[in-house]
Structures are given as C-alpha cells and as structure tokens.
Amino acid sequence: MYKVQTLNKIAKIGLNVFDDKYTFGDEVENPDGIILRSFSMHDMELPESLFAVARAGAGTNNIPIDKCSERGIVVFNTPGANANAVKELAIAGLLLASRKVVQGINWAKTLIGEGDQVGKLVEKGKSNFVGPEIMGKTLGIIGLGAIGVKVANAAHALGMNVIGYDPYLSVDAAWNMTRAAKKANDLDTILAESDYISIHVPATKDTKGMFNADLFKKVKKGVRLLNLSRAELVDDAAVISALEDGTVAAYVTDFATEELLKCENVVVMPHLGASTPESEDNCAVMAAQELKDFLENGNIRNSVNFPNCDLGKVCGSRVTIAHKNIPSMITKITDVFAKDSINIENMMNKSKGDLAYTMIDTHSALDGTIKDDLKAIEGVIKVSLYTE
Image (tube, rainbow, N blue to C red; front, top):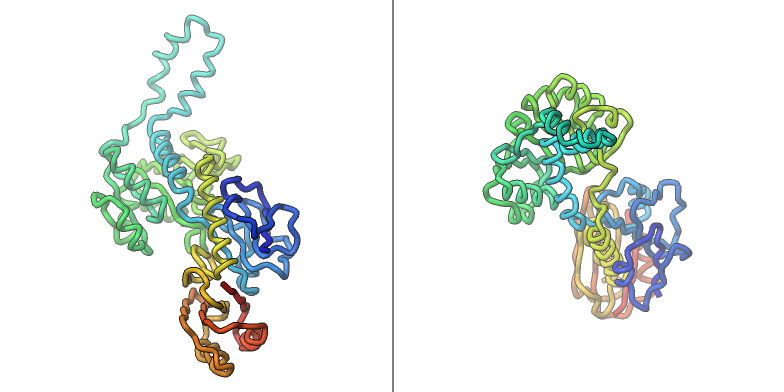
C-alpha cells in the first residue's frame, strides 16, 4: 500500500489516478509521496518515509529543493500542463497593453449617476483611451518553452511578427513553433526590435532581476512589456522609472505590488495565469501520474532535481539508486551485483548537475542485503527496490 499526503486541495480528477493500492489525503502520516500546489514546505519537517514530492504546477519555489536533493527525494513539476491557460492570458495581456481597455472600463464606471448624459460623456472622453492595434507589430518572446511557443504561434495567427529568444531551446519546442517566427541569437536583438515583449522564463539566479535599469536602456522606445512568469524577473523600481520617462508605454503583470497598483499604464492581475479549471485538472493529473509511476516503477519524468530516467514498467526486480554524480559510481554499483552473482538484464544511468540516477533490472529475486550493500557505497544517497 502506497501513502500519499496532499498539502493542498487537489482536483478530484488528479486524485482519481491513484487506485486501490493507495491511501491519500491531508491527514496521511509517514507518506511515501507528497502532492501539493502552493503550500510552502520550507518550514516543514520532511518525513523519513518520503521518496518524492509532486508539484501540480510549474514553479517549485515553495519546495526546499536542496534539502530534498540531499536526501534523495525526487521533486516533480508539471511543465506545460497550464501552458494553454497562460497563453490565453498572454494574448489578453497583449490587447490590454495596447487598447487601454481596463483604464476605459474604470473611467466609464465613474459616469454612474450622470443619467442621460452618459452617452455624450463617453463620446467626449473616449479619445483618452486610444491605443494601437497589435497586427503588424513585432512581439519578442523571451523563453521558448511550452508557454512561449504557444504564445508565439497564437500571436503569429493574429498577424504579429514574432521574434523568439531562448539559448536552451529544445528540439521538441522548435518542432512545435511556427516557422514564421524568427529566432534571435541574443537578447539584445529582442530588446532593440520588439514593440511588445513577453517574458516566459523561470526565476533562477541568472534571470532574477533581468529586467533592470541597464536592460531598459536597450529596449525600443515605447515598448509594451508583459510578465506572466515570475515577479522576480522584473525590477519594480526600474520598470516604474521606465514607465515615467516613456521608455515603456505599458506594463502588464500577473504579480501585484502596492507600488505597481498606483501606477498609470500598468495593468496588474492577481496571479491568474493558471487559474482555470482546465489548468488545475491538467496539473493535478500530470503530477499524480508522475508520482504514481515513480512510486511503482522508479521512473522519473519532469523532475527539477534528478534526471529523466525511464525503463518502463517493472518486469522482475528493479533497483534504483540516487547518487552523487562522481567518477567510478557505475563500476562500484555493478560490482555489488557481480559479487552476489546477480545478472543485470537492463541498466540506465543519467545525470543532472551534481546528482545522478541509476536504474537496474534483473530477473533475480532481491532482498535487503543488496540494498544495504549499495547504500554502503560512498556517494550513494538513496536506494529503492521494486518488484513486479
């Protein structure tokens, strides 16, 4: 029986992935796995029983990744599951950045009480809310993952010229992106040529504060900026200054601060990117499937701290070893099997930064002895046994 603790309300369609071999809920103790959304785990004592954490969403800032890695706990996320929801909001953001729809609606509400004069006042005041069309304009997209590619394709379909920049563009993403989009070789090209810029990158040590005062000196005058990714990517003080001097014509963001709420030409939304029932369902199902496959088969897909590694369903016996990415580990691991005259039928080893993951299949019956022998190897973090 597998035990899964839920730290947030998880969509029922996601929990339905777990069959009668599972016990799940927020009161589960000593869980094998945890599934959550926005709950912060940083002050939480990680159970000794824990093997994996699955985040029903793309961001994992609420999970102590380093602590999990030290203990061999695999952390999953669900990239792409909410991509369509964010794409649709980004397209709305492009229009809101242009047409002053929000400002116009807010002004129109001030006419309540004017009675028969409303029509005349609207005709007189509407010139204050003139804004350009997006057709024929250039959209620069920074980050061409699942969301960025969808935004590129949708913007092209609306008649925009699209330039994309992503030094880590994957083959899968490239296949899915419209051929009409131009790929920039550097960020400066995006900044210099774009009438609109939409940011779709994670918050890392390299991207935090990337839109700062120095970067705003390089943008096309009057650019309209969208940030639906992470608040930390844009320096609020810098963008406010750029708005005041006309460098930035409009800023649309999904991350509210009091300073931004006070600014003109800023449209602030309350973190609506993935707030659709479809997105929540997709994320819940994907997170549950990743967690289930790992607990039952040791397979890893979409982990933020360990490499993707998949040998399919267990057939016979399987050992998985989470270990440090250091020389001679494979030799030491296989020597344990040779010592006990256990034939290795299939093996896979992958690494990700300082960590690595090895999967070994055998038709021999395994017991706790081999697990103890493997754990005794210097650099091994966690060992798990699986049987058919």
